[in-house]
Image (cartoon, rainbow, N blue to C red; front, side):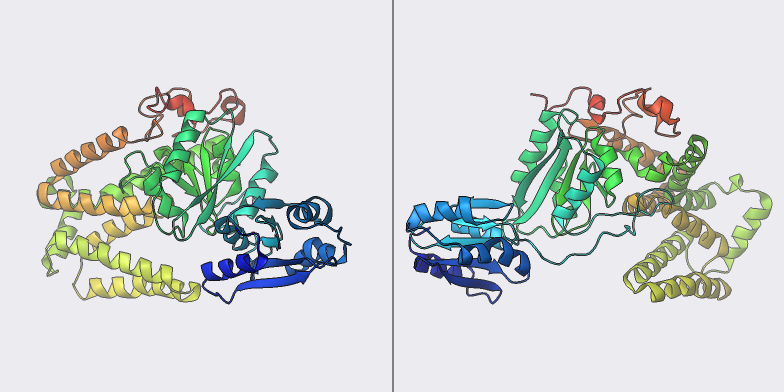
Length: 484
């Protein structure tokens, strides 16, 4: 920075290319010294700026000082804001300004002050639509990182809860905050996540999902991910108590959780509010629904083509009648129904809610029934695909993975039969068992098996038994490659 206020103003205007939302408020102090306050339109609270910065500067009788001495006097004795940061470079000054701070520059000094008067508009705290619960909090994360940090701190008034801010994105310069409980999350895991975030060379980060490939151990876009995502503060707090690390990205209501296990996709906050026996039944149903969504269409296809003897006579005759009156081969018919289902799902998802419900009803009743009556598709085939599609909604977090696996099993089931499904199942299980994040195996505690941690996998025990052991995920490492 320059000692001249005029040169500093010109340089900042040059760096912002004369943007219309970059404002400059010139002020002449009562001792004749010139100063200026830089803000970004819409990012600062004008009333807060007037109370904590402009009014004290104008109303205070300044001493007969110049340059750095006057700057220090304003810093320590005049400004009334609770958050003031010393700024030494133009890049930092612009970064603070675009984050809602007001930046004060004084003529004769090559330093500036960033005054915390953030006041930009954001969506209020509301219940997340993607993680609805019957019992529990109705609060969900918003797009403001600071508000999200507050929602977590309200639930965990623990001095060991630590936030660390990092900037990612060469162009967007998106702010994010790492959150973890010191002493629960290991230092090696925290340092490794921090290292991966700082090594992220992406140009723009507009959502939490942009960072997932950079946080994976392999660094590739794989089917399953070891990085979880949530919109609920209570869910994140529960994971933090287990030694996880949360990543809050400014501008998105989704918070990343690392590491993330496969069995956690079948858990919800309602499981821990209901009685253990009911929560266990619901969880078993979820596992059955997952297997149904993945295997039923492919298994139906394999049995009809290669092993029809496994069907009862009455059902086999019905399937044979439907195949005789439909023009398409069975494998193509299954693919067509699944393809049409995905189209209807996307249409219902992207349209406004009222129209989305109408599309679902039209697709399920009108198109399905007319297709069967016209002899384009068979009723047994439609039933098999519909049951799998309905089951996939039980585990919404795994819907993309279920879709890919279902199509894969349909392909191998139609070409290789039951043996093809068995071989692909082995490949998928080996892949899942070999996947890890921060040294934690993806399918823990099933493999490697842990008796203590299995009390909250397929069934959930009561809180008196759950609270006896420390459910720290770091204990599942079995020797992390980052423990150095």
